[in-house]
Length: 106
Image (cartoon, rainbow, N blue to C red; front, side, top):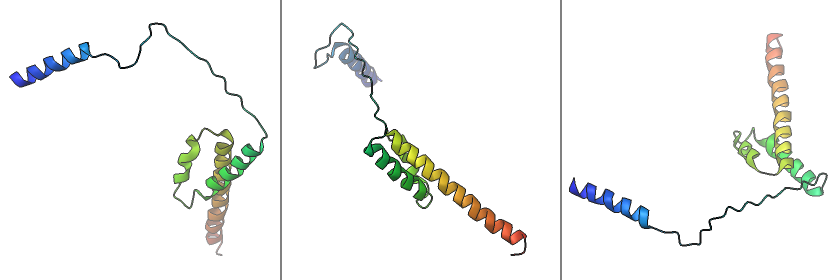
């Protein structure tokens, strides 16, 4: 019990006495940076096509590539979503056709 109290007193003393190793200023400085977006650049088209294929083939990789939706490139994210939705529509039509064919006796 004495060791625990000694450790607590030591930690409390060290936290109150420790200082930063870098200069700390008293004034608050803020900087505002505005992001400029450039539309219709070749890079955005390329990223959109790449994202489409990533989203399209994400069904075969157990949906793990959908974690790439957190990439900050907007064109890439749009491509992933569109590829995912196209593949979803194709799967619904394919699986719906199989189910409808078996119901009709085919």
